[in-house]
Each structure stands twice: as C-alpha cells, then as structure tokens.
Amino acid sequence: MNIIFMGPPGAGKGTQSDFIIEKYQIPHIATGDMFRAAIKNETKLGLEAKSYMDAGKLVPDEVTINIVKERLLEDDTKNGFIFDGFPRTIVQAQALDKMLKELNRDIDVVINIDVPFDVLLKRLSGRRICKVCGTSYHLEFNPPQVAGICDKCGGELYTRSDDNEESARVRLETYTNETKPLIEYYLNRGLLNEVNGLQAVDKVFIDINNIIEGIK
Ligand code: ADP
Ligand code: ADP
Ligand code: ZN
Image 1 (tube, rainbow, N blue to C red):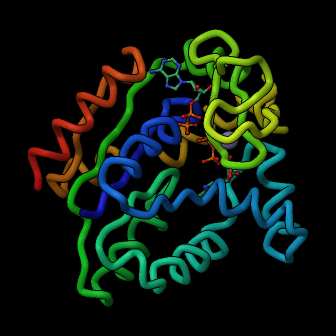
Image 2 (tube, rainbow, N blue to C red; image 1 turned 90 degrees about the vertical axis):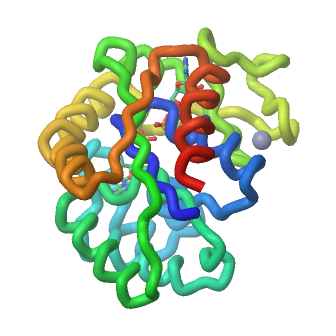
C-alpha cells in the first residue's frame, strides 16, 4: 500500500504515521526527518538543507527529489510506503509520478489532514520531539507521562529550532503558496481523501484507518 500524507505543518502527519507504521508495518519516508538526520550527522546535504529549514523555506526541489529517489530504491519500500511531508510542490509530485512509473508502482491513496491555521500555530509552538525515536508530543494536547521524557523510549524531548512563531508563520505561508495546490492535483487524479484533523488523535486515526481499509 502506497500512501501519501498531506497537510500543513503541525496537522498531525507524523503523529498519525506512527499508528500506520505500527499497524501496517510499512516504512515511513519523512523528508523533514531525513533532512534533520543529515543536519545532525553534518553531511553535505545537511549543510545545504539547514539554511532553508531554519528560514521556514522549502529545500530546493532537485535536492529533495534526489533523496527520495535513492530512498525508493531501497528494498523495504517494495511492499508499500507512507510519505509524510513529500511531495510539497507540483514539481515534486510530477517527479514522484515519474519515479513510481519507472518502478512499476503507483500511489494508492492521498490523505489530506485539514486543520485551520490558528490551531496549527498553537500545535507547533507546543510541539516537543523525542531526540532518540522522533515521536511528537505536545505540552498541552498530547503530553508525555513524565515531563520532558519520551513514553516510548525514555529519550529526552526537545523543541525543533523551526517551531518558533516567526518560522512557523513563514512555513504556513510557504504551505499555502507551494503545497496547497497539490490538493487539486491529487483531486483531479481521483486520489484525494480529506480528514478532519481537529478531532482528537485517536479519532483522526479511525477516519484514516477507514480510508485505508476502503482501498485495500
Ligand atoms: P512539519 O512537520 O512542520 O510539516 P517537516 O519535518 O515535514 O515539517 O519539514 C521540516 C522542514 O524540512 C520544512 O520546513 C522544509 O524546510 C524541509 N522539507 C521537508 N520536506 C520537504 C520537501 N518535500 N520539500 C522541500 N523541503 C522540505
Ligand atoms: P506534522 O507532522 O503534520 O507537522 P505532528 O504530528 O508533529 O504534525 O503534530 C504537531 C503537534 O500537534 C504535535 O505537538 C502533536 O503532539 C500535536 N497533535 C497531533 N495531532 C493532534 C490532534 N489530533 N490534536 C491535538 N494535537 C495534536
Ligand atoms: Zn522516544
């Protein structure tokens, strides 16, 4: 099953991906996570991506498309994958179509998690991430059992450098200008499903799960 999760920053893509991975055992391809890993490892890619990410801008299409291309060639993607945060532009979506065609694969479903901007700003400013396993928490909406510590692995929680108010506003603007047009792109392809991301985490998952079960 080949799934794309779409939605603005803070919509809950990462949170919901965790449930899907657990239930369906398919790899999670999150370009944001890949860039953050590259920054941590101080690779050339990391150096290139960092300035864009800190500014709330998108990493250039060519760079992003290349890392996805490499990732899709790995064996574990053969039985399915879930894209989280990719594609984010029409150019990326077209490149993905081409890549999948060459591999004789196709997108099964695109799930767009819809949340209004005022709520997103609160979600981003209260988001905390596990340094070790990447799980997302929220100080108010989804707190860990022990403050500052990951429930799953005991790792330390941190605040992403781009989750400050200024960067978050730019990211939401970038989303509107560059990513939102993808809704129509996938609507025209008959692949788009909308989910109300304002509901509680487990309710959002029920809706997503129903969509996935419906296409299996
Ligand atoms: P969020 O969880 O807020 O949606 P991500 O972790 O997906 O954010 O992405 C963080 C940043 O990484 C983005 O603001 C952007 O700079 C960069 N990035 C991630 N995915 C892409 C992509 N597909 N194209 C370009 N830049 C990307
Ligand atoms: P994305 O990957 O789309 O940027 P995340 O999954 O990291 O979003 O979620 C953003 C923030 O909102 C996190 O702090 C997360 O704990 C919280 N969150 C996710 N889903 C919900 C929800 N349904 N209701 C309230 N808060 C949520
Ligand atoms: Zn953890």
